[in-house]
Image (cartoon, rainbow, N blue to C red):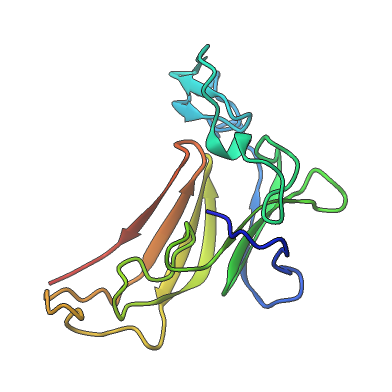
Length: 183
């Protein structure tokens, strides 16, 4: 979910905590959907089932999203990219252009895709690392210094003082969180 502000976040004048390259490999079904029997959306925004392009007109939401402050003009996922992660944003740059045009940007906020507090409690995380594989950018978070240790604020008995991963899954056109919880 992109903010409605018309002023883009200045991702180049901030402290970058992690970066990763998106380099299509032969085994990456997101970029090679037919040969690798891909299931889901591919880099071109089209749906594939077992490597067969579906004839329906359903396109990935990221493909149909219009250009704006947080979305570049290229509708397809970049054929090569650079992902920059800071404490406040994740920016995907199109590495196929000499000027590294922005493809998409996610701002860190509780109710956005790049969440830092998924449960609205006294649990918070700081983005720390990145990984890319098969159309999924995974943001690995570590608990921030103010994270609640021990019982959750609702006394449910859960300690969520563990790492968290937010997966920006372009192949499934969704975002999901993985977090370890122990009672």
